[in-house]
Image (tube, rainbow, N blue to C red; front, side):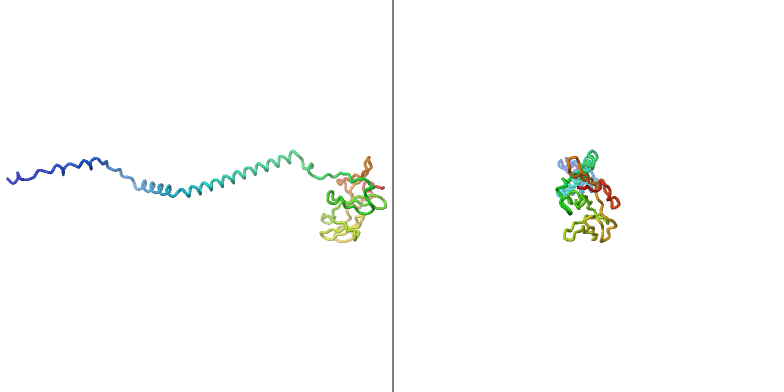
Length: 209
C-alpha cells in the first residue's frame, strides 16, 4: 500500500543535536544595565590620563591646605611671643647717656640724630637737647651748617639753632628733652620728658656748664 511507503519521521530532525543542546540559554540583560556597563568600560579605558590629572589636582589642594594650616600656626605662635614678651622690650630706650659735656663743642652736634632723633646744642650758657621732630607734621629736619638752621625736607619749615621756628608752616618751636648730669658727670637724656617753648626755662631742659 502506498501508506506503507511513507517514510517514518527522521529521528535526527526531531531530536536536537547534542552540540546545540549543551549551550545554556543566555540571560536577557536589561538595556539600562548594558548602558551602565558600557559607560563604565569606556571610562576605565580612557581613565589613565584623567586619573593622573585628578591625582595631581588633589595633591595641589592638599598642599594648599597644609600651607594654610602652617601659616595659621605660625601667626598664632608670633602672637603668643608678643603676648609673653611685651612690646616695650623691642622699643628704643628713652633714657640714655650721651657722654661728658667736654665731648661737645660749641654749636650743633648731630651724631645722635639717626640713633635717638636728637641734636645736642652747646651755646654760651650750657647744653640743651632738641627733639628732632618738626612741629608741623612730624618729619625729621636736617641741620644745615652753611645756613646755620634746621630745615625740614617735607614742607620747608625752618628753625634756628635755638629751635625757634622762623619760616614755613611749622606752628611753634621745637621741643627740648630733659637733660641732666649723673653722679659720674655724664649727660643723661630722657626723651620721655619733653619741654615745649613755654617751658624752656625749666632747669631740667638745660645743663649749665
